[in-house]
Image (cartoon, rainbow, N blue to C red):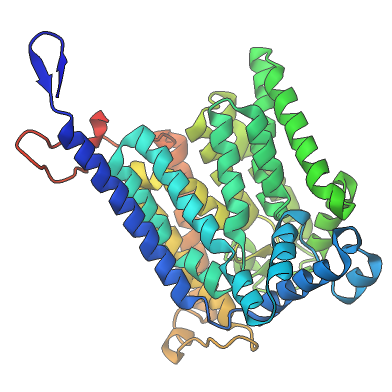
Length: 437
């Protein structure tokens, strides 16, 4: 116990016990999420993606990074990923072969998912208390979308979402060099995670315009540029080469929607030629990214940067043609702290998260090479053309509701007034509301 003021006694032990119990709850939820991921790890996954990553890993071991993007290999087996994930594959190819290599490729998202859950829990605990932190860890660890996209499918979107999340949190705390570094790393995992660089870039420009403060721009810009040059140098990939790589990747699938349930999936369907729509989609994307950054004019704290990043991720998924089914992944990561702290965003987040998982399942079952087929009742209901349009409309409406509530004041990490989560008391008088933490 410790005396506070004159004669009053503040009990410390119950609070320490509550904290320990919260840590154990967070650890238990994350461990449960890891266990579920390990259970699905041995699935065949998406054979084309997994075998491609294995081939890249083996090729990196054979020729090294400097020759990886060579024209001959680009023609025969074109790699369309920037270098960050290739470093991981290079390590995997050096250490593993055969089935261990396949499992390593499919497991790459698991540590990133753990880091996302921990990062979101720490952030929400700082702002809203222990129960919100537990909720954040549980929402991500047990969400079906990341489990399906990562260890089941074999993709690595969590690996790009992690530095994206870190860049915006760092920027919100004024650590602009760190923010620039993480934003550059995210963009060099996959181009769609470059929304972090857009939001950080807009923030430091606004700092310069409104506050006449040039140091954020210099720090973020230099850190980002150094990161790009350092990561790309072993692959002989500078900024120009990386932009060409992103351009080539965007041109590889000239279709309306690559199973993204967005406006073009409603208007044009999936995998239809997009010549009539691509310019309009690009224009909508530019407008959407601009509007996502508008709130930064007034505030550039962590909640506002996370909200701007989530809106930019919505723009990447819902507005352009050629969007893949997993482009919504980053938005769910960036919205996670809001869902755990703001009551008016929790259920829209859950709806969007579950809908995202359904769309991943739909996309996966469309390919003959996969071993997973949708049951007949699902094909005759939700997966009909009418069901697809209805699901897309529902996701667009839910995203619109999230945007409306963020803009109308929910872009905060303090707990909602009606959020009264508490841990059970150990003794009379030890119950606490998170609103006071």
